[in-house]
Length: 267
Image 1: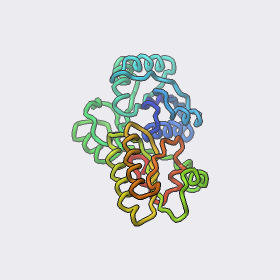
Image 2: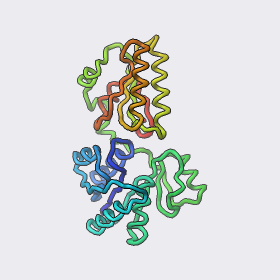
Image 3: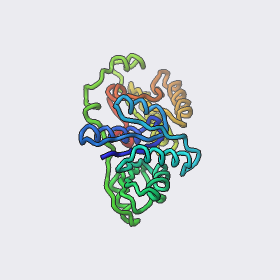
Image 4: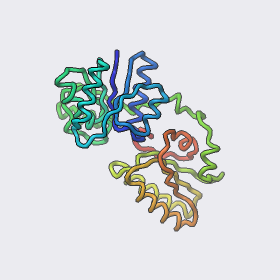
């Protein structure tokens, strides 16, 4: 059986990681022929390392995106998948109108947003990331539905799978410091409020405790978080908050933490 996985733009993020990891697991554990269709980005390198076939999609200028719809149709005609697995509503609109309706290619949708998405078609098999969203979707008459918690590669991410010495040295983490780590997209939607609260907690606790916060990620909120971090560091007289940027492999950051502040799949 061949499955075409239609994911987001391959920026560094949880849903992109989920899509890649699940496609690889279906291939390696269950023998499916899986390939990835998405707009290129840094996570394409991760897919390449895992040996996942990748078909690049155009950058969308609108949703639905006529350019992505045409490229998706071309990919379906060439690859002849038995099933399309679409991640989230932006990609769902493209696939629904480009291949599901006119070409009758079976399709399932995974919606990992934290609020209900009313624009999703009601008649497609759909998974949600939490039981609450599943219940909401049922009340709206959607069927069939399942919960899909964020999939995690427990072997790749096993305790002790990476060393921390180089990472700790890079950020001058000292013995005796209480290291807080959060790995997240630095976006205003769903993320910024928590990130700002975490920095302010360090501002308060940092007067009495040797806490150090590392924020690992990138996005449109990065500049504002960096400004806030600089203010806190100036007040405390030390580098208590570091905006480290994105990491394709965040495992050294997790492994260096005394406390992880997780959101979404990061938990």
